[in-house]
Length: 148
Image (cartoon, rainbow, N blue to C red):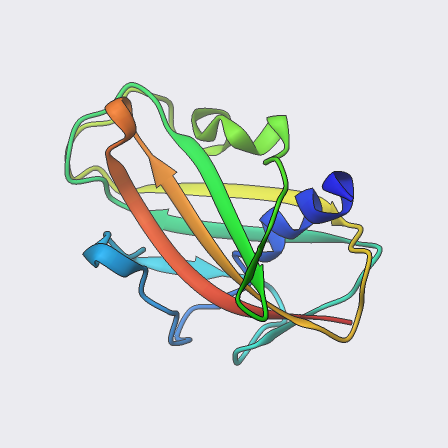
């Protein structure tokens, strides 16, 4: 089940430019832009057994030598356990520049992953968080995703 849920990590970013995303709790910083091809409104529809592409643009308010990607998924208020795929976990490997980053430097993180969910026809809330050195939050947002 972990493998299937892992694919949902990428699904979380299923928000296109101009969409209202869900702000994370505790006033964590929001992204400047999130783009997912084919998504025009929440929840974004994501086909199972497909490759999913996304990009998120943000500017950390602090200098950092690292970026770590973490994702939480919930269904009907229950959090689903999973691990972020290794190729996405280290955010510095997936940005349009290289680490270290200066405070206020705008950066775009891109990725793709196969969607291999165990269920279809459900809507999942995903919270996507990128942290820098010392666990300081660089960006966070949440979105609803419908698995088709």
